[in-house]
Length: 142
Image (cartoon, rainbow, N blue to C red; front, side, top):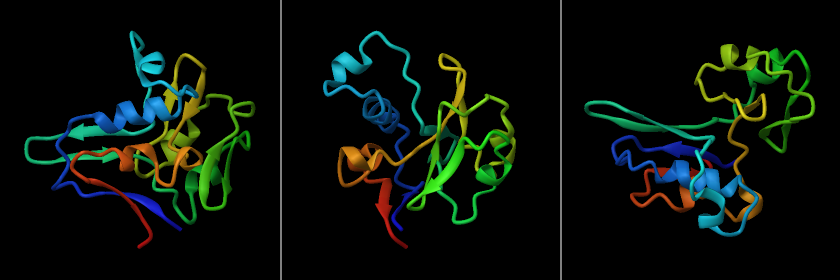
């Protein structure tokens, strides 16, 4: 299965992946309409350091502990992609504590968790990878 990988040596910490993620998950076809004057809530986050930058998103683990720990059954695996059923999420944060990569995050507006679901229905690769200007985010099978 293809997954998102990050080449930290190439990440510029430009945060464009966060904007593309927010746009992809907005449900809108126009980026300006989707993001202008709005606080974005991307499912990928850029961690910045003195010598290294790194875009962090779900690894879609083969044996995901977040799915096993979800007390409401909101997390599931569909074709290798870990998805959230928003109608089942009870915002208990158990998945946040269980994830070894720290990629699940609360969407405080909706009162549920959010995470990368690869947004591939909108194209052949997740928007973060497809639009990374330095090709630091790669979507491939390894």
